[in-house]
Amino acid sequence: MMRNVRKNKDLGIYGLAAKWYDRNSRKSRLAEMKAYADEVAKHVTKGAHILEVAPGPGYLSIELAKRGFHVTAVDISPDFVEIAKHNAKEANVFVNFMEGNAAHLPFEDHRFDFIVCTAAFKNFKEPVKALCEMHRVLKQEGTALIIDMNREATDEEIEHEVSKMKGFDKYFVKFSFKTFLKQGAYTKEEFEAFIKQTPFQQHKIRKHGC
Image 1 (cartoon, one colour):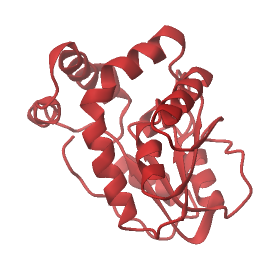
Image 2 (cartoon, one colour):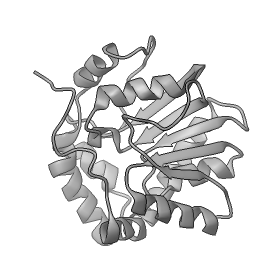
Image 3 (cartoon, one colour):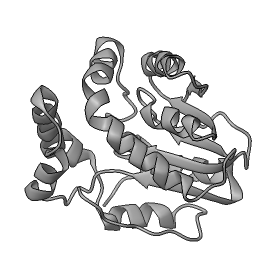
């Protein structure tokens, strides 16, 4: 039976590990984050209020801010929050980066037009509660976009996903995908089961890559 609370989750990335991740993932993830930002922009009007859950170093939030959105981002790691603030300052944009937990979002009801969470949902200790919190802080006609790994991803799909990366980053990401990240990810059926336990009335699950 699938559990709604998982051990060894919500650990975040801290200290030197957070700095290493920022330094080594920036080049390989920047193009991807720009593409995600363009996708989000198709669903909301300029000036909309967007929340990113678990932004890490803040690349996507920064790209969204560049496109004229009001962006708030909450991460469980205080070190990532500080790194993301620094990255936003370097990019000459403002994002309200703050510390917080996806299962206890520090916002009033119906505040955001759009919520996005990329490559982090599998790390949440309370996935159903996190989804319920996203629904709570969304406006009535709002949308949540969750992008994450599929536990049923094949080795071929993982190879394709990392094919554009270079150097040590490529090998580290591939190793991560094939081991602990894949083990922590969900199948389509598991995610469907989570959604059924939330107030979300409509949803669509689409497979792209791994």
